Amino acid sequence: GGRRNLGHHRGNPYRPLSPATVGASMPPGGSLGGSARHQPVHPEALPSSARVTLLVCGHAISASLLLVVNKWALQAFPFVWVLTTLQFLPAAVLVWLAGVMGAIEVDRLEGKKV
Image (cartoon, rainbow, N blue to C red; front, side, top):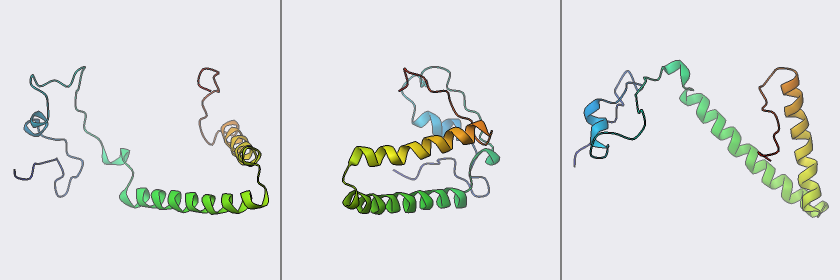
């Protein structure tokens, strides 16, 4: 078949899909279950492509460095769970402090979530 219109138009990539396009992917009866109302997404609510690219690259570099540092650390200190705990505790303390200072919103620790 031909190319389908997925709502990606020049000048407005956030334009909602047309009912005809959405209907083409719906099951018979035209319902996805529940109340599937389409609400347009405002461009300000979505991160820019440059920001997403920066975050993905930053995460990849961070994960790669963590892998290399952990391999080096395990050669010098071969106690895996102690090393994991020593890495986790400062991260947990920093998140807690950021929450106390109001920099981020931190969910309460609940036993059933642990």
